[in-house]
Length: 139
Image 1 (tube, rainbow, N blue to C red):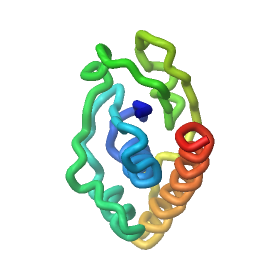
Image 2 (image 1 turned 135 degrees about the vertical axis):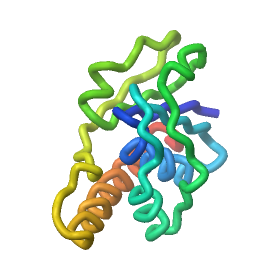
Image 3 (image 1 turned 30 degrees about the horizontal axis):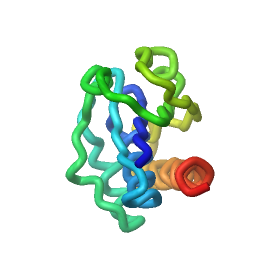
Image 4 (image 1 turned 45 degrees about the vertical axis):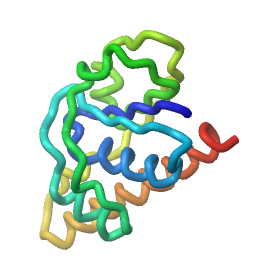
């Protein structure tokens, strides 16, 4: 079974969304973890936007990357530039991947405009995670 760690700055939005999709797409073929270089708590709008797509991340917790330093991972995915720059060195031969997704938590405007931005970023992450599982879990 593959072990995947998804990292972002606060483990509140992007990494939580990716965690949810990777778990959904990989099923029992991978063990998924997410963390941040800081912890900001899981953003309620991330929970809401995932629920709109039928995935429940309401039980997720915001974890610090230091909690996972003793673990071996097959893949480490950073989903923002800040996490890529601040990610500690992990032992082993984990393959590293990076995609700098926009931060939906920084969206401004009306509630509807913010909801649309969360959905837009969610859909970007969904496509990335689907492609990732097809290429690295099920090939």
